[in-house]
Amino acid sequence: MNLSERPAARMNLVGGRLCLDFVNTVGGWNPDPSSGKNGPYAAVPRADKLNDYFDLLAWSLHTGLFSENEAQALAREAGRREKEAAATLKRAVALRGAIYRICAAVIHESLPRAADLDLLNRELNVANGRVRLGVGEENFVWEWTDTKNALDRMLWQIADSSAEMLTTDDLTRLRGCPGKDCGWLFLDLSKNSRRQWCDMQACGNLAKVRRFRQRQSS
Ligand SMILES: [Zn+2]
Image (cartoon, rainbow, N blue to C red; front, side, top):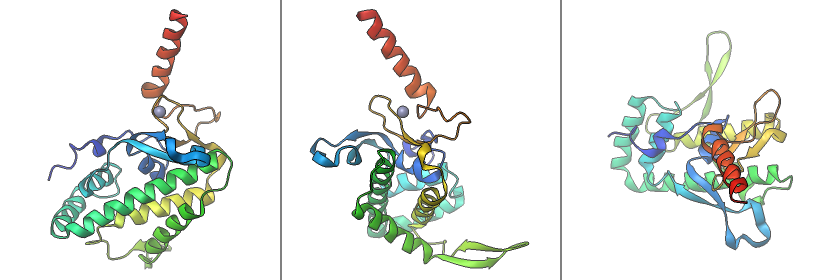
């Protein structure tokens, strides 16, 4: 199966953390008009890049989570276990929404919704159940177990990445891109902490052109 031709395999990886690149598997995040008082924490994905399980595989291959061989083996497995593959995609999309909203809450300096934190914790429990202590070269190392046929193994790593970021990173550097129809998330790792756009080429320049046109027409 040709996974690398899929849009999910050509996403711009600018989040700075795996979990944020995962949140950015959409064209953009639009504010949910029905969100009412939930305001900025509720958003709906626009131009979703994860439309079936194979998109999820394609993205995992693109980010280097899996090798080509591993991804192809899982693709064959998914063909045999269609229902489970569909359920995994559903879990992935739910996890993505929860991570997005938790991050949006952080950015807006408010508390995340309990339901979102619960969902992330459930996925973390699954991930933690797949970790074992193995023998490394100098120290012992954490290893993932039973990775071969586990259709959901990318979710373990995404949940793990979220927990890692939320517990250890400087969250005042978490940002949402203000580009029109964008809303992608990223961790500002720049020295001066003044990164504004998900990608200067994509959103930054567009905004410049838009400002220029506005000035000309006024
Ligand atoms: Zn952007």
